Image (cartoon, rainbow, N blue to C red):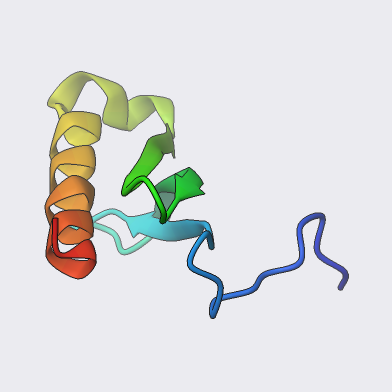
Length: 77
């Protein structure tokens, strides 16, 4: 299947999108990741898509917090 945006994991400006699964059921409930990445400026936009049942329990806040922490650890800044 062709990609809308061709993945290039070796690029310093590569996007990152991760699947999010429910701890209770193991089913996919959304995605979280970085886009609009600028390796030169050590900057990226975080984004997420979650199914509505995940909205009221703070999942987005927790997911983005973990993602940002991981980004700092990986980028070294």
